[in-house]
Image (tube, rainbow, N blue to C red):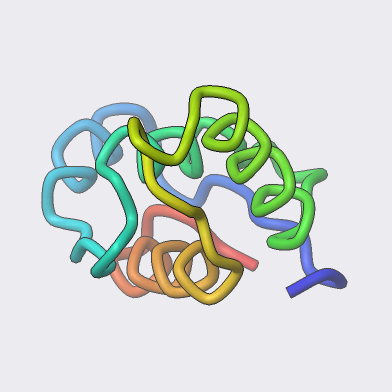
Length: 88
C-alpha cells in the first residue's frame, strides 16, 4: 500500500458516471470515501492517502466520520480500480 502511486485511469465524464458504482466499504463513511478519491493525484501512495483521510476524520472527531482503517482505504481504492476509475 505504501509503494504504489494511484492515478486516474478514467476521464472526467467516466469518473462522474462511475463514482456512484464504486462498492462501499463497511465502516467507511461516505464522505471519507469521497476524500479518498479526491486524494488520488498520481503521486500519493495508498499509505499517503490513508494518512491524509484518517487525519481528516480524526480532526473532525470519531462521532462524525468514524475511524478510517488502512484496510478500508485499500479496499475502496481496489473497488475503484475494478471499475477502471483509478490505476496503480
